[in-house]
Length: 221
Image 1 (cartoon, rainbow, N blue to C red):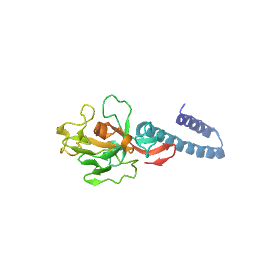
Image 2: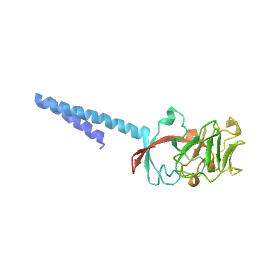
Image 3: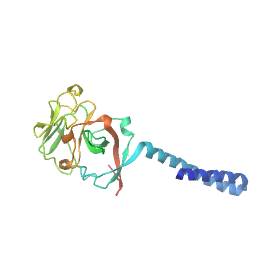
Image 4: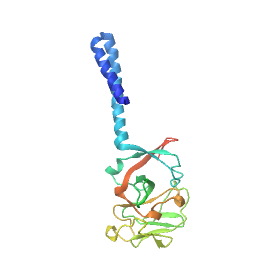
């Protein structure tokens, strides 16, 4: 039996007792019933949040070190991306961008639709400006550029059979992140399968935003 149901039964019992008890006892019962009402409401709200808005996610790889370590359990807000688009710098959870993978991915939003993205000498550039990235574990050991309707890593275009590179009609320009797609990187740049390996992530595949580490130490992201 759920905790909320237990409280509801207890409240019903107290209500019945209130009709048969004396005035002094009725006041005490009424006060207790008020506390139970508040607990029941809080329980229902928590249940709704857990079922429809918030869920947990377990980290099983090193791709987001140092922000998220193997074994960390964190909370995902599943409502955010129904209300607004992913924002640069957010940590997002999304479905695998290429076939053959089942586990959800978690990476950081680096480029949004319409942005130019380049990586040179270990520095990430968005719209021509270097990013300040205190969360980065180490500079990327590869060069990258979004150009000619593709993603080029160390001068070679990603294989479209292995990476999600949308057709030209979905691009605003040959050197900008296409409409409906995002450029994602792990914080542990050289040990992360991310957009430099499998291309762009579809906005429609995003399931939530990571906002708090729950275990082993509570920490906002």
